[in-house]
Image (cartoon, rainbow, N blue to C red; front, side):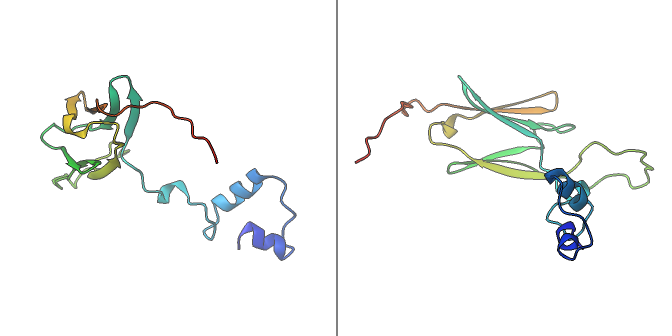
Length: 147
């Protein structure tokens, strides 16, 4: 029974703070909150913009540049790696913290960036993708008068 249902049935005192609800619902299986163990982790990527254009930094620990593929589909850039399952099963791990999983993700890129001149470099387990600005797009601000 959730905390709010317990209040409605008179089994619990009224809510004292939002943190109280969060803590109580964190351990409740009927709650809309999900425990951390059931959340699917996304692949680690940093996306930022500077004077050179748009940059994606993708964590590729233990991979070579031949393992990862970059595809451009219209205005979407897609980065993927398909893991071969040749992992030894006789290991008795005390802790397994290295993510050895496949990934396949894409980002829709604004038209002010030139997807035909993407540059990618792999260095020290980090894939750096640079998408330069498109030279023909003018990024001026414009004020619109409301009628």
